[in-house]
View 1 (tube, rainbow, N blue to C red):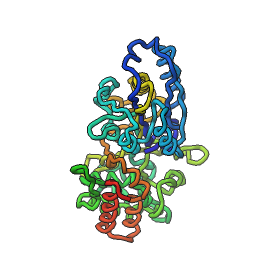
View 2: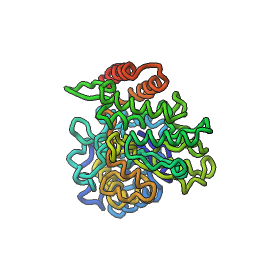
View 3: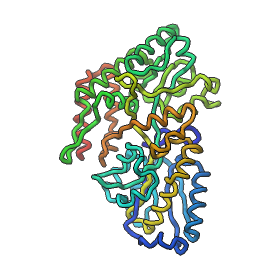
View 4: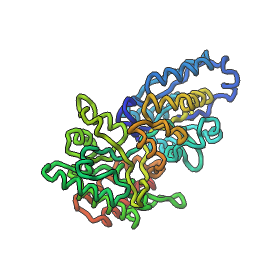
Length: 428
C-alpha cells in the first residue's frame, strides 16, 4: 500500500521493498574501506525526510569511503511500470522501496533476494511489525525488510462530543450509541455525519471483518478460497452496514478522498483515518487550523468491550534486487536505514510509525493512538495475484452494493468471494 501524503504529517501507509542480489561476494563487507562502486537506491517520494537519508549516507560513507550511494526518488504513479522494466533488465537498482502489497508479486517472480539467513543482522528483527513481516514473507522465506508503517484510528471532534454528552466509545455498541446521540444533537444539519464513511472505503471496512474473526481469503494446499461469505465476515459487515446507514451521510458510491475536507468544514464528528490526515484537516490552505485544539483520536473499537479491532497496516518494505552486483553493500545500507538510530529519526522527524514494536513508544500527542494501533494489525492475502483483486475493485464494489442495498450481504459477499477465489488462483 502506498503512502498518500509525505512525511511532514503522519504517514499512513506506503510500502518499501529491497531486492537482494544473487551476485556479489560476501567479502564486500569484510574490508569496507577497500570497496568501490556505486550503490543505486530507489526510494518513493515522501517516504523519508531528506535529512534522514543524508545522515544514513554520511554514516555509510564513513564505513565505506570509496562507495558512492545514488538515491533516486520515484513517483507512486508510474512505479509499477518502472519496476517491471528495471527487474526485467540486467542492471536493476540495488535497493528498492515498494508498497507492502506489491512485494509478493516480485518475490514470486524471483526479482528479490532471499535474505532469510540475514534476518538477525537487522536491528529489532524479532519485534518487526507483524503485518509488514507477513508482507515480506513468501513460502516461509524472507524477501525484504520492513521499513515503516501507517495505521488507522478514529479522529473525532472533542467539542462535538462534549456538547452531545458522549465520550470516546470502547465497543462497537457504544460507538453506535454515541453516534446516535451526535446525530440527534446535530439534527438541524442535513449534511452532518456522526461517522463519515464513504461507500468504497475498504481499508476501513476490513477491521470490522477481522474483528468478528472473518477474513478476505484463506489458503490451503496452495489454493486460495475467498471467505468474505463466511458467517463471521458477514457479521462484521452487517455491523458496519448498520453504522453506515445510521450515522453516515457520506456518498455511498464514493471513496475516502474527500473525508478530510468534509471534516474540516464542520459537518463531521468522526472519521476513520490515517494519522497523517490530522495535518490535512489542519492545513491552513485547504483545511481548518482553528480545529487544532478540538481534535482527538481513539482506536477503532472491537465488538468486545475494552478491546480494539485489528487494522490494516499500510507501509513500505525495503528489498534487494536478485540481480544486484552489490548484494552485501545493499544489505549494509538497508541495515543502516532500518537500524535503531535512523529508525528513531524516521519516527521522531519523519512522523511515521517505525518498523518494530520496540519503538512504538516514540509516538507523541495524538500520534500515540496511531502508533499503538499498529500493535494489532492484519494483512491482505499474501498472494502474487493480490494486485489483481485491487485492480478489479472487488472490495469497493461489494461494499457499494451492500450500502446502497443493491444486493443483500449474503449475495454480495458470495459474489466477491467467488471473484477473489478466481483471481488469487491465477484466473482472470
